Length: 152
Image (tube, helix red, strand yellow):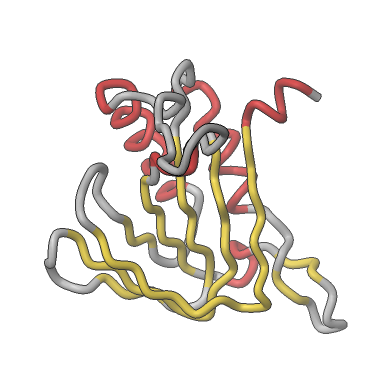
């Protein structure tokens, strides 16, 4: 699994041209599932994200989690996080999990994020056409990759 986490002032998403889902300050999480992943790591990833101390305290140091501040979260499935660009100019996505594997893992991760205690959680839909607008804060971008956890 791979998650790209961005600290944001606000964000919104539309799915398949539908109604805009808006959020205030918090995190936008782009979430991808790699071939061979299973749902076992979803809770650990959700907990890590929700407790990341990447918001500033009174002294201006990144020392406060989004949960401590009662912030929001947006989760978007994104298979392109596993693009392989070694050969040619067209990315290959063979490392991304197929929908029959990825959808249940994405849904479990989404459930874990919703249970983590964020003020509000908005989300995309697996395989849908989505438009996302966000205002980066910092900018602060963190990448979590469960393969790195296993290899260290």
